[in-house]
Length: 258
Image 1 (cartoon, one colour):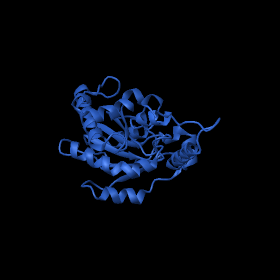
Image 2: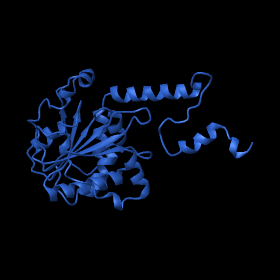
Image 3: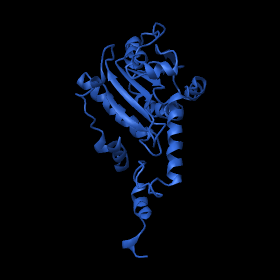
């Protein structure tokens, strides 16, 4: 068979190496092939599990214990169950209590939040935190890390303000998709305070090596944003990421896809 008459599967397989998206699935009569249907169902089940499976706090604490940091503190949102968290996003943005958090006056506070994928925090949280500590720990004072459960992004503002931190970095599980169920995002907010919105933050998403952004690259971008925020005096839409020009091509490709 000549190259001009290759089966469609061969053509799509070339492109499929460049993306995790479902492309060129083929047909079996009027339906998709059974293999593709089963793959979709498995991916859908993995995404649902990632959303509903609770964060294993003890396991995460054990992972963090291997790092040279203060013991992690814990904060819960006002959502009392996973079901309530999913139905009431507003409750996930507010803490049940932050009175136990010390006013540290630290340069940076790091929050590890379950978000919409506790699995992502379990799989990648400690590795990403280690990379952040390597980039930031020798240059800035750090508050004790905080593990936040049933958390939305804005919960970080309450935590950062309570800790008296100049900048809060929230590591949070991103909404699972049908190609990735364990992706982390970083939300950086300078001068955190209650009442800010998403325009006041900077986001780095799609962190899930080996297929997504790697820990070191994510930490390098975060460090550049911290420096920029301190110089500018704010984060958000006014703060631009200038680190990409220094990144390898593979990292820029992942960022362009996120």
